[in-house]
Image 1 (cartoon, rainbow, N blue to C red):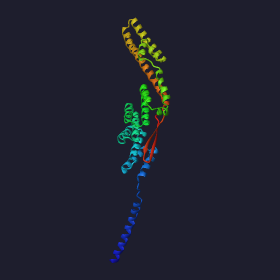
Image 2 (cartoon, one colour):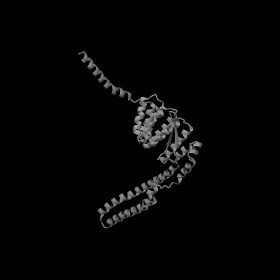
Image 3 (spheres, rainbow, N blue to C red):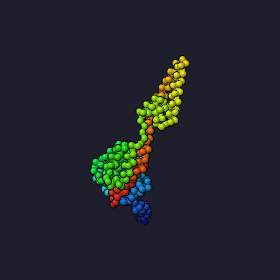
Image 4 (cartoon, rainbow, N blue to C red):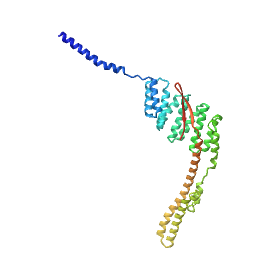
Length: 311
C-alpha cells in the first residue's frame, strides 16, 4: 500500500507539472502595451486613412491613460477622423467641447476653425460665421485673427455677399494681406459691379408681348416658342368666336390665358436665373484667388502642421 501510494503521488505530481507548464508559458506571453505604443498605433491607423479604427484606438488610449498629456491631442484626432470620414455632426460635437476645455491655447483656436468648417459642410453657413465671430471675440493672436477674417470673407463669398466679404478682407493686417495676396483678391472683388444683370420687373413687362421677356433675357429660342404658341392660341380663339363657336372659343381662350400667364412668369424666372448664373460665374472666378491655410497646433513633444484646402 505504501509503495502504491508513493507511486500515485509521483504520477499526480508529474501530471500537475505537465498541466501547469502551458499556463506559465501563456502567462509569460502576456503583452503589456504602454502609452507610447498605444498612441503610436492609433496614429498609424489615422495616417493610413483607417479612420474608424483610429477613433477606436484613440478612445482606448484615453481610457487607459487618462492622465497622459496627449489625451487632448487624441480627442482632437478623433474629431479630425470624423471630419475626414464625412461625419460632420460627430466632429462638430468634439470640436465644440474642445473650444470650451482648452481656453487660451492654439488647440482651442484650431477647434474653432474646424467647428466652423463642420457647420459649413452641413449646410449651416450662418452658424459657421457665428463660430468664427466667437473666436474673434476671444481676442486671439494677430495671425489667428487674420485667418478668421479670411475664412469669414470666403464664407460671405460663398453666399454672394460681396460687400460683407470685402469688409472682412479689409480687416486683415498688413502682413496678412501680403501673405494672402489680398490686394489681387480685392481688385477682382471690386469688379462685382460689372456683373451683368436683368431686371425681373422689366422682363415681366416686356412679356406683355409674348416672348419679349425671354428675348430680353437672351433666351432667343424660348422667345420664339412663346411668341408662336401664344399668338397661335390667340388667333385660334379669335377664329372660333368669329365663326360663332363661343364654347370652343372660350375653351381656347382659357388655355391661352394659362400659356400667356406662364409666359410672363417664365420671363421673370429667367431674369432671376440669369442673375444667379452670372453671380455663380463671378464667384467661381474668385475661388482661383483663394490660398491654402497653414496652421500650427501644439502637440506633446512638438507641433502639428495642418494644411487646409477647400474644394
